[in-house]
Image 1 (cartoon, one colour):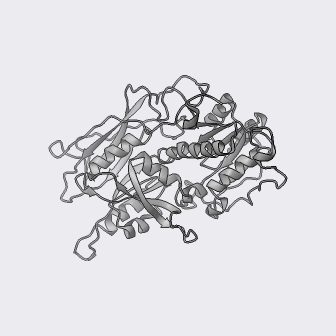
Image 2: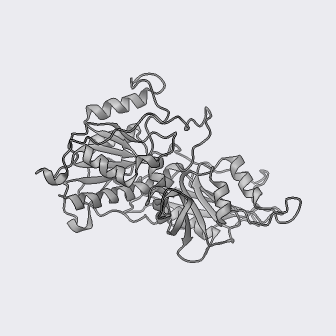
Image 3: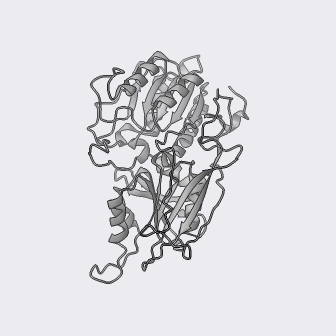
Amino acid sequence: MCSPPPATDDHPECPARAGNLPSVPESTPPPSARTSPRPTLAEVTAALDALWPPELAESWDAVGLVCGDPAAEVTRVLFAVDPVREVVDEALRIGADLLVTHHPLYLRGTTTVAPVGPAGFKGQVVHDLIRGGVALLVAHTNADRADPGVSDALAAAVDLRVTGPLVPDPADPTGRRGLGRLCEPLAPLTLAAFAEQAARGLPATAAGLRIAGDPAAPVRTVAVCGGSGDGLFAQVRAAGADVFLTADLRHHPASEARQAAGQTGGSAGGSARAPALVDAAHWATEWPWCEQAAGQLDEISDRHGWALRTYVSRTVTDPWTAHAPSSHPDAPGAPSSASSASATSSASAPPSAATKSSAPTEPAGPAASSRSSASASTSASSSATATVTATTSASSHTGSSHPGASDTTSSRTPSSSSGAPR
């Protein structure tokens, strides 16, 4: 998530930060001082904190170690977006010692972890993790701001070249850290072509992509923000981005963003072109980070000679399960058949990690072996703005590394091991 949502009852993700993060015990010896090649949780936590420094997190966030014995050994680490019931079951099933998630379990803090009441499922997660010997570590807005961070992974997934942060971190002398990323496409393309490219690169979800803008408009600069990004519209306009790819776009901020810079002449007197919008599922924009994060830990493990395996959860934790598009031909604003154009494409999987070992698997769910398709529809109105809708559909596709494919967990290995388990 790039920016905090409003503190409303229907969007409760803007709490006060829940206390200080646990520090690595000073008594923990470095890897070179121990004969065992297995790192401790304290050592792995220190390594991950170096990748995503907790001090980079927003003041309202809750990051760091949630539960786990710092002295316990870690041999298997599972990366996922959400610390939900299905992911915890997955961690227990593969014998993970550490679960690293992007989203916090208790973002607003809590006074109890009892597995009862409206939030009892969170307490049950804590109980099951501790009972199973699985630690939980959260890297949220600190991973958003890091270099590389969540938005770097999103840019790579949709074939964009990062040129810098959208909102630079003033404390970073290199100018590489910050929220969101400004990017360029690898080759000239239109908004419709970029929509198809994004639909291919992101994991399949029920909602697919929602796109606002002229399908034929050229795309030269793209702003991306993994997670909720409608708090960054001012920065997107200031950067002069042609397209903004993010998630959780709400009606009023999106409408105002399209209108604010979209006037040419008239009473508004503006001249800047409004950025086109590409709105994806929140989970889909952040899942690529799991692959990136696992690869970073693999490199650290190689450097220290740790006997450590990383796994990436392919369990789809997007809450939406189906999509029923509006199709009434007489509905107000519906595109007419004469002005409607569509373009479809099969989804190709993002680069998958090399297989280190065969993780225990379970039968695939309804989202198994899915592809994405994008369709562009031009509204029969006097304005030059059209709406493109990219949706996902099920089809046969073997070997996909997208979540929802045949294996629910993918395991990784450094390339130097040639696929042999350690």
